[in-house]
Image (cartoon, rainbow, N blue to C red; front, side, top):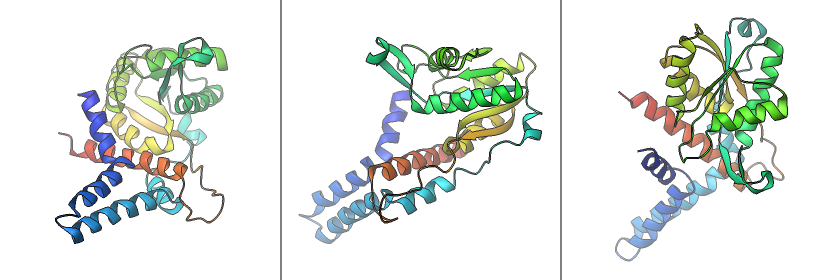
Length: 248
């Protein structure tokens, strides 16, 4: 089910979805020329639009709705929960070890910053959907070696954000914790906060990576791969939010 969901998501997101639309249009040219041309140009147009700064920024702005937590809010929290953002398998430069990727590192760095401000215990959550080292374990290693800190709890069974919330909530409630600072990237926070609230925790959003990447080299409409990547990340979150709302 996990891999089927990943495959379906890939087919629905750029660049695959617009390219499939354009390819269907080209295949129809022989029988339905007007329809085929319309689909082909629509696919190309959508891909171009998603590669531009205005469109990628608009998609992201609807997700980055939470500001950094105020000091008064942080004083109410009992723990810091950090969601894993990915892992690099068999990293040659680290002797073939599994290490966290850039997304997880950004989240971990902000969590370390919050911990030094609040002295709250840390919970790291992230499993191993493809086998190998769990993402939470790789984050714990980086937290120890790079920041000199130790996590109090590791949650290693989760496969997605919903699992992160359910398993983390069960672990924390057993320790008498019900209010948490939730650390993830701003683009992911809207969906993550909802899932953790549904799992029964009181969530104080603590997003990182807020509003970066707006400057463009050249005209503000000039397309580029970085903008397409940001659009794809935003659409991934919007799809996740829709699926969450439709879920029984």
